[in-house]
Image 1 (cartoon, one colour):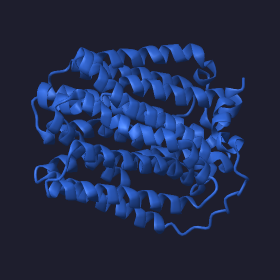
Image 2 (cartoon, one colour):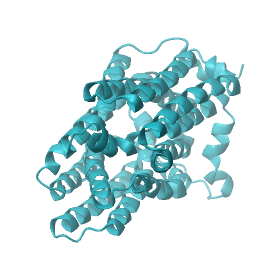
Image 3 (cartoon, rainbow, N blue to C red):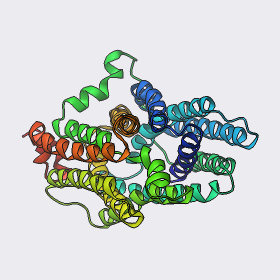
Length: 390
C-alpha cells in the first residue's frame, strides 16, 4: 500500500509536468514507453532471482532505488533544474525498480497465507492496493498545488516506509532452491505458462484488453482540455478507477467468486471496454468519474481472477518466474498501452483514440472466447488445473 501510494502520487506530478513542459500527447505516451523498456528487459531475470534469493531483501533494494530516484526529481524541481530529459531518465530508473518489485511481491504473498486462502488474500491485497491508488492521485493533486517538489518528497517517504515495513516481516521461510543457472531455468516461467491454456489465456487477455483500452496516459488532456479542470481534477480522474476497483475487491474479499469464473472474467473484460467507450465520449466531469469507476470495478474482477489463478496453479519454486511473466504482460499492457494511447491520440485525436481503444477491448474479449475455450470453461479457482486440461 505504501509503495503504490508513492508511485501514484509521483505519476500525477510526472504526467502534469511532462504535458506542461511539452504540450505533447506523444510525450505523455513516451512516459509509458520509458517504464516499459526496463520492465520488459529485466522481468525474466528478476523472476529467476526471486526464486533463488530472499524475496524480502530484493524488495527492500527495489524500494531504496525508487526512493533515491524520486528524491532526485524533488531536488531538481525545487532548484529549477528539471528538464524533460532528466524526467525521462528518472522514469527509466523507477520503471526498472518497479519491474523488479512487482513480481517479487506477488511471489512473496503466497508464502504468507495458506493455499486455500489465496483467492481471498488476493482480493484483500487488491483492496489495499486500490485504496492506495485512490488516495495517491488525490494527495498528489493536492500537494502539487504547493509544488511538484512536495509531491516527490512525499512519494520518496512512501518508498522508504514500504522498505521498513518489508523489513518487519519476521517469519521463517524455506530456503530458496539454488538450481544451476541455465536458459531452461531462466525461461521456466514462460514454459509453465505455455503449458497451461487457462493461465495463458487469462494473462494474454489482460495484456491486449488493457493495451487497447487503457486511457490513463490521456487523463491530463481530458482534465485540462476537455473537462476543463486543474491538477485537482486530474487527481480525481486518476482516483476514480481505483474507487470502483476498491468497491469490487472489498466485495470479492468477503464473497468469493464461486463458480463460472471464466465466464465472469470475459464479462468483466467486455464491461471494461464499454466503460472506456463511455468515458471517451463524455464531456461531463461526473459522468467521466462514473465511467472510470465502472472501468476500475471491471478491471478489479479480472485482476483477482488472474492473480489467484497464477498463484494457485504455480509451485513455489517457480512462483518468482511465473509472476515475472505475469508482471511482464501487465507492464506491457499498462506501459505500452499508455504509449499506444499517446501515439493514436497524436494521429487521430484524443477522443477517437480512446473510443477505438474501448471498441478494441470488446473485440479482444470476443476473440479470446474462441482462442481459449479452456479459460471460458474455467469453473472454480481451486479446480483450475483440472478445468484447464479438459
